Length: 285
Image 1: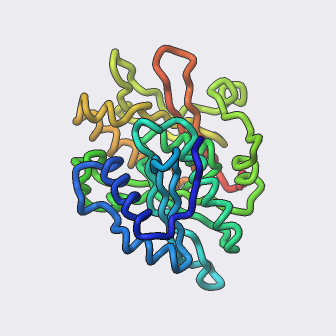
Image 2 (image 1 turned 90 degrees about the vertical axis):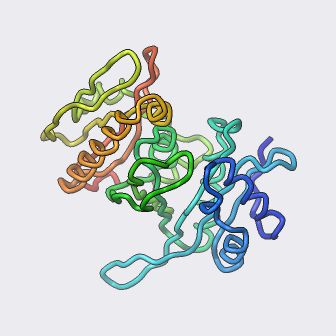
Image 3 (image 1 turned 60 degrees about the horizontal axis):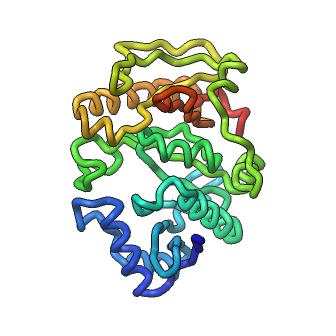
């Protein structure tokens, strides 16, 4: 059984440091030091650990930040980092950590949580957008510059910044004990959701098209690779092609008034397929 705990001691922060080094291997310089996490935790921030027995299998770190609106500055919670050990992934630990974060931030009276992630990581899209109910219309080019860890080295660190609006019905439905079933490709087809483009299929991986045009549609499907890390390892140039193609698509669609509102992971065929759902306008918020 997995238990989520608030971390508050130097010894617990040391465990969180060790977990970071496993999840993001290759550069000790990229590990958030325990003393920084401890300071944040004692001053309105949050460090959570997921434990199986005495073993930490996941961690989450966030702190209080500010964002500007027309009437001034408002508080938000900036969720900087979440990691789960490789052997414990796809078991609900990430969702449990984020749900605990949502509950604690709501108790603090803060109404917005933001974080960033690699838009080509299908697993993270499924969790952040499809499972948690976050939305996104902010694309950040090469946000962290040249990254040195084993997961990110060699490619621009493009990121989506997502918004989790803490007190909305949308998020409460996603976070409930009985959440809505995930959106399927069959649902999208029945609703007439249009594909933004058609990928090129080969024996191994999907390839981006040479060009695309945005249809005049309320909702769009944007396909990405289902296993970007495997693709990157097998064909680095194809991974670069997807990075720059997806950058153009997100920036173009966001400029045209679309936002990311859902994620579809289709397993009807032998090879899983992954899609973002983009909605025109803000009615779904």
